[in-house]
Image 1: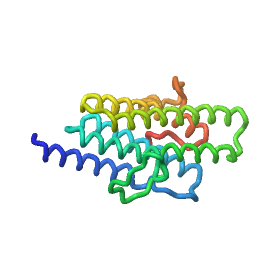
Image 2 (image 1 turned 30 degrees about the vertical axis):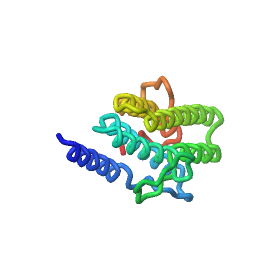
Image 3 (image 1 turned 180 degrees about the horizontal axis):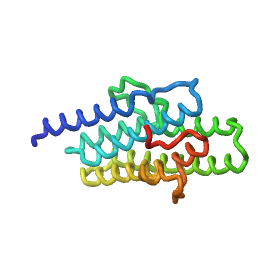
Length: 197
């Protein structure tokens, strides 16, 4: 496959991911806790798609473009490392999104022990999102395609951990995740599993 057709495949794959997953992850100040959680889950899945595609980018330039898109998605338009590319939609960003959701949880009227569990899961989500951001930023800086691919794979792994790794684990009500994260928060809030989207 020549360089032009690889880029076309990459562009089509990214466009499909954005259309399929990202249609409702736009910024909004007035959303319910449930819609905020679902929007965050969709944004994380979009980030996983971008990281996955970026780990198979045919050139270092393509990898860097996808890494920047992931950084933009993680930080949002107000982020320190945000660079406007060609996004027609403004994203809040995953990192500010989990902070907003966490703040809303405190006023959700949860029992103290449930609120503590939600807070632990929320901190886990924040930590792994920060780690994904570090990996995406590192992918922007490396000089070799193979090293950039490893950084994008690491970002994917951190985002997958936010989703408690697999749909089967998240949907199984009897299983206990090793690292409680977004699906645990949704279950505790009575929102339902992420994978039913």
